[in-house]
Length: 238
Image 1 (tube, one colour):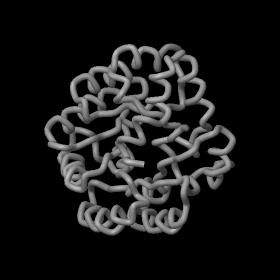
Image 2: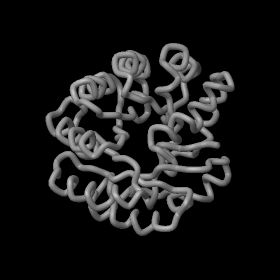
Image 3: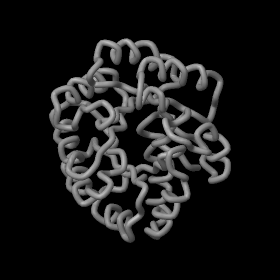
Image 4: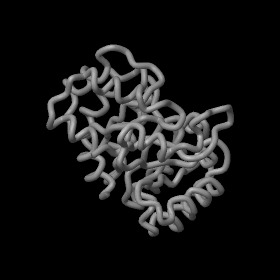
């Protein structure tokens, strides 16, 4: 069983041959379930993208959705959470800090994540460099909040180790357009493996990158299963 917690649905604003092939890509790599955000919601219009994704998810067993939230438009975000989470097809929230101009340390992001905590679902938040430390602090300051550090800080994965060790409600997922040798192994050696998840960034990045990086870490069977699906199934209740 493999659950991809960081995937996308819909075309990008640049040419991508795999933009509409979520299920085909999943089949190619043996991914059983994926939690996806609508590209339109992430980069352009959150409510419109969320509505479009809701239609796709209706009756679709292999895909679950993230309600994309723009911290600069919290009234719309609150309405979308009320509309989409009760359907059971949306199991979390997606926030891209760069596209929305809402850094991890900003008051806007704190307010958005307070909404998430109140809704009782996890949030996948884009992190890069030291921003994962700021996200950990928000998590510590917000009772009940569970957050996933998307890309686990990318080139700041050393900071991600510190962040995860500081807050046991912060999870790490590894997808990145680069795959430095030893990155996954270093994180696994230093972080509780119950806080580790698997993500690919499909359809933006081919899943082979994430699969190769994780395989190179030579994980134990127990840790590999937790990362591949057990932790995600428990976190998202799927």
